[in-house]
Length: 493
Image (cartoon, rainbow, N blue to C red; front, side, top):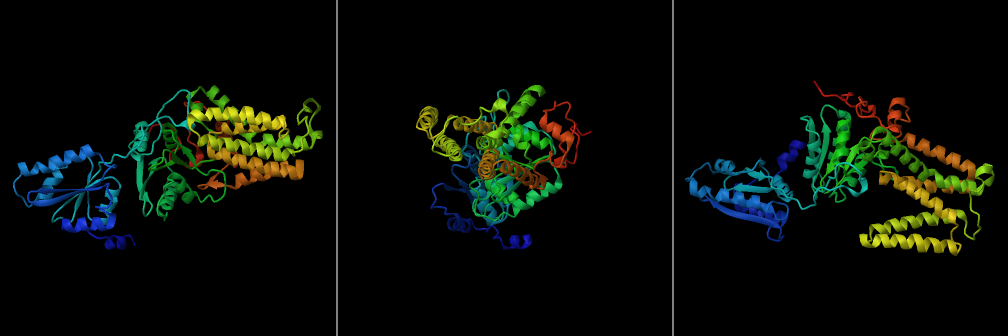
């Protein structure tokens, strides 16, 4: 089938006039202001150069034009103009193409194409200069001590930031294109002698099978196609905007998916515990890193179970030991506690969404107004009891300790579901809800990887490494869940 597609592609005509007419009809040359063409006369032959303003480096184009024009001053008439031009293209990335489809795709991708009258082969020169920002520390993965560079929206810069950290000849960045109209660049990053070839083949086939007009939402669209998550709220892949985190996972045998226009990359495979690790743990000593990891775990547990457990004690105070019998609302209101919990939790989301859309100088003022005025007045008028505000705030802070934003939102949805079953069935509801939740997570697989590994299935040594941050010299084995081709972390002989 691939051969048939190649046969159906239109070859580059020998006439530059015909090529120009094709470009006018196909991509709107002459109609779109950002599409450019530079016509030259070299040794009495027409030479045309096609490019897109804003995606190319203008200075490099000017230098190439000067070199090509200089041919008229230093060369005599020759039938071998094609070879002369090839030698005068002073650039490190020059390729040849033979079809008009390739010509159009390369021009719209930000490369320049040079066609010569009488030739059915064109030159493609990579002078891309995409607009974008410089690498800076991502807001969602800050560290106290460590590198301050982060991925940006340019796939070339992102792969360069990774290669700077892994100068291994076996590091590969395999380029694919997705989107019939957008033709977005997608790169698979992996270390050849580490990555699981079966996983790599699955990801490659899934990406190549994507049929869609475009992926303006970049990596999130790719994720929905390759993991087929549906309405499962729990993330099946991990995102990171830090090159050091991506490089660490590459060295463990993971496959990284880079998508152009996205400042984050996709890490596969991943498990629940991968979403709970943070770069800060490895910027501190093992003891401090372990302490921070346990604080984070307690925060996640609190975000899930603190509110349902407190609500259960409100409904059944007899379950409380005498020493902590003070837990529970001391005041009565006309609003049921379950409604208070849902309203307060929704109010936190209102504030979060408002903060996202509020200019930074106003966000702090908005937070103070919400916390001091709205919260206090709601208590004074009897809408909320103080304990509701306290425990909702604690659960929310626990959500903020979760490194993965997607995981924190999924945990919140589970927390609200547990509140409902506790309101309906009291203590049995909490037990049944918790049991169903664990069984449901244990039944999930992300890219054929058990989601709760190494807890379920149980791997004691791997679970110990998940609970206690090991020292780097003591970590001699790569995670077995990746099925790495080389289990030992040591230089190849």
